[in-house]
Length: 200
Image (cartoon, rainbow, N blue to C red; front, side, top):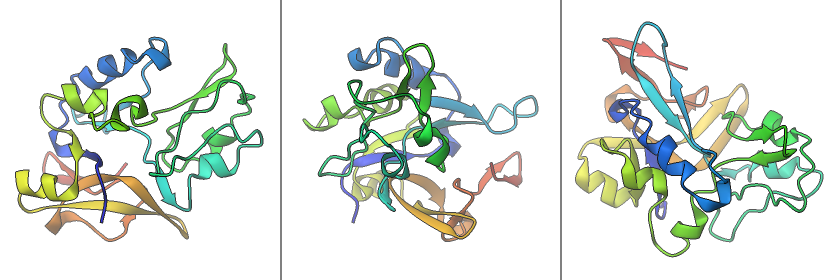
């Protein structure tokens, strides 16, 4: 069973960007946000989705596996760290390997940057910055049991299919039990927007 992690609930996201602003406050990011806010049907809908690192568990962090400089480390508790600034060569292998499109390259700094689950906080039992400021609970930090106690009837997906590859993650997506296919195709859950199923 999952330990404490982030659960992303796309049905609750209102696109307020509070998570993006909070992420910029982290000292290690130097004013840059490591969370991306994606709009699922921009121009037709206000639906949005926060995208954080999914901290892949199986296979273990594709981004780390392809790093030629061993700059991306995975902690004993499964948190995939941002690239070590003393080792990263800015090659972008990690960007190409990530099935969720999370890592970004700072071209000026020649450095990979991504969410590290606010490890400076979560290692001490505190919630990540993004989850502490989310006004609707679209980003929930806790255990699966805590989530289901607060939101009866929800299920979570932590296994996603990309073609013939299956990826199990340490971060999960909240999905209504009657609307999900297992494992989730394409990396994101089936989400209902304006009465129709939308997959991104």
